[in-house]
Image (cartoon, rainbow over the protein chains, first blue to last red):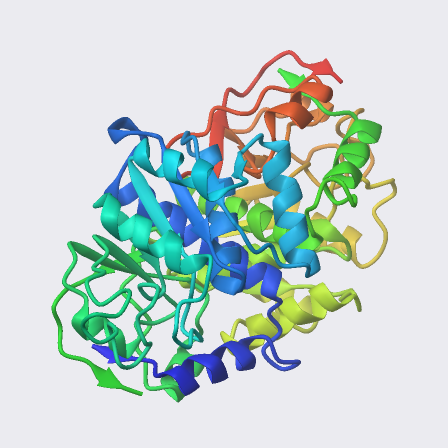
Length: 242
Length: 242
């Protein structure tokens, strides 16, 4: 499987949103978040339980989680969000307002989060993406520990939080060394750390990549079908870093 | 069927994109254009012919058409676009750049448009939306006449171009009086002119409306299913203007 290393992933994002690329963060985040919500529907339709807990970090990975929460609501779920470090940029405050209009609860304390976690059917890990640098800082260390300890099924957005985009899980004894989400959705392309992913299902999302840009980065456009915003790909693969 | 009159439709758009509503035009146009592309897939899957001609007007209706073209490309179609009056605002120039990267042709003359029309399987009418005021001005009069004369199946975006959002088709003898698209996708909610729509299928798109805002405007949230961005609704209905 072709994967995008840390620098390539950052370059690709930058290129899409450049003057020449023509995309805005609003458009890309909308499609990314929608693809996460479609992955949720695929692995865990509302008939299996509607309580989805979205844990959102301070960056774009968290923004993808907020967009996902909106779509999950419209898909018939009852999402709840833990977003302890809200970002001030307009797109993030706008997304929060949209979610307020849908009466999607933002949990306001670790206690509320812990209680919501206990009654959740599925957890979305939208804490950190490909630009994460260890260690996991407070309060996200506590959040991630609680998610791991809960043994709830987890869908990780882009990379499992605490993992290094290229190096995979942290060393034994460190927070996250035992973190293995049940599901993973890689955004735009898989990252090298997928070689350590031993969960049940892996999806690629973000159906906006041109063949030209994909080719430039040595990627194939994933095998999307119909109007799907996600494509399922095999788990347990050897990877090539681009 | 509950429908949104001209003023209500404008107010609703304004409310969604207000400081309090939290949406950006980028987000709403992305979801609207995606819903149009999903409607295309529903009425005319690529197996029935991939040549889709998008005619795009100078306003937001045209922008929905541009977003639709991008998704159609990713869905396996070979879209072509006639966009004779490109708009300078950033979102429109950005969308054009995205489409250039996909090598989607922009037809550059009426002759090219006419020739493309003849070989098209389906035409998207994204010329004018709910804020249209007659008459249809050049060059769109020629474009619309050619579309009507071609007798090609047409999917109209939001309202059939040349129709009045509340009053329906123009009077006999005027351009558009005989215009009846095969398919219609109403965005956010149907408009009163749907009472004159006697085509084959009618969809609602734009799965982002909160129950609160819908309620405020006297609308029900349409019966979306699964992860669909469109809901099919009956044709030939009596309407209530809100």
